[in-house]
Length: 68
Image (cartoon, rainbow, N blue to C red; front, side, top):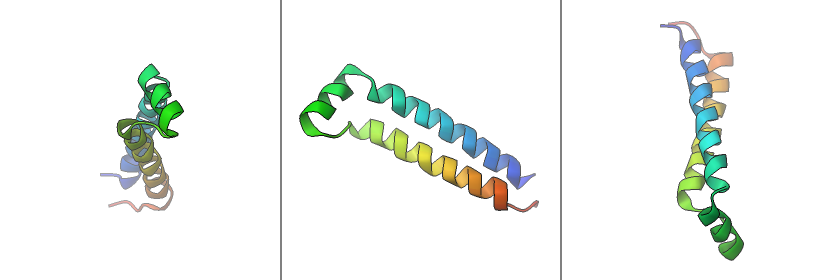
């Protein structure tokens, strides 16, 4: 199996997680939470953190991965 394919899949999953994180941050409950506490809900933060981590991993594996 080509390791670069795994990197591309990780990029796609990361993009989907960031999309969900963005949509969650626009929800009324998250807007209220951000206004009152200055931070988003835990679920929204996990979507964003997970998305960024998956994109970084996907880029690294795609660019520097070797074929198995």
